[in-house]
Amino acid sequence: MPEGDTIHHAAKRLREALVGHDIVELATPHPRHGRDRWPQRLSGRAVSGVDAHGKHLFVRFEGELTLHSHLRMTGMWGVYRRGRRWSRSPHRAWLVLRTGQRDIVQFDGPVLELMTDSRTRFDQRLTGLGPDIIGDDFSERAYLRRLRGDDLTRGIGEALLDQRNLAGIGNVWKSEACFLAGVSPWRSSGDVSDDEALEIVREARPLMLISAERGGHIVSYRPQRNASRRRRIAPEEESTWVYGRAGRPCRRCATPIRVRGQGDDNRATFWCPACQA
Ligand SMILES: [Zn+2]
Image 1 (spheres, rainbow, N blue to C red):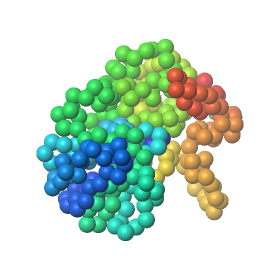
Image 2 (image 1 turned 135 degrees about the vertical axis):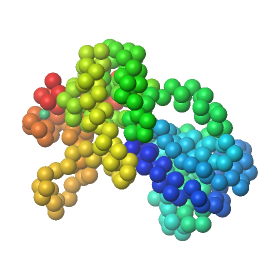
Image 3 (image 1 turned 30 degrees about the vertical axis):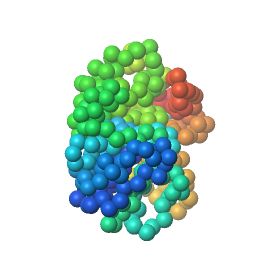
Image 4 (image 1 turned 120 degrees about the vertical axis):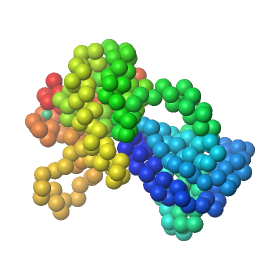
C-alpha cells in the first residue's frame, strides 16, 4: 500500500508535469466516471497546484475545482512521456491527463472525485486527518494531542496507523519507526511516554522525506559499505530493519524478528522482541 512518502513523491511528479503545462486532453475511461462530465467541467482550466496530505492527493485546477485521490491498496499514479508504454493496462486507467509532453494517469483508483476547493476544507474525512508526518507544517504538539485524545488502550502500532492521529504512516513505516525508536508496537499508547511517541516520528520523518524526494521503495536500513555489493537482493528485504523479515535475525542483536497481525484490520506488525522489549 502506498504510504505518505510515495504519495508526496507522486504529487511532486504531477506538479512538475502539470503546473505550467496546457492540458490538451482529459479523459475518464472508467465507466464509473462516464456521466461526471469532467472533461467538460475542467476544459480550459489550468492546474494551479498539486499537493498531498498524508495519503491523500489533490490536483487543484483554476476556478476552485480540485481532484481528490486516495490510492488505498491498489491504485497508482503514473507519469509517462507521450508515446511511451504505460506500466499498467489502459483498461485500468480511471483518469488520463495529457499535456504536450506527458501522459499523467491514475490507475485502479478507488477514490477519485472532483470537488470544490471549499469542500476540501470542510469535508469531514479530510478535516479529521491528523498532522502530516512529512508535511511542511507538521506539528509535534498536534500529533501528541491527537494521540492522547485517542483510545489509550490500543497498541501504539495500531494508533500510528490511524490517520486521525498522524497522517501518512502506513504499515511498513509503522514497523520500522517503532524499531528505530526502540518501542514495542504492542505497548498500549497510554504506556508510551511523550518522548517515546515523539522519538518514533523523529526517526521516521527524515527517512520518509528522503523517500518522498527520491521515490522508489522504502529504505530505512542501509547495509554497511561493500557488504552487499554485487549480490542480487530483493529490495524490500535488504532495505528494512524489521518489515518483511519475520524469522530472520535482527540486524542489531540477532534475535529472530517476529510478525503478528495487529488491530481491527489485523495488519502485519514486525518487531524485534529483544530490541523492542
Ligand atoms: Zn534486536
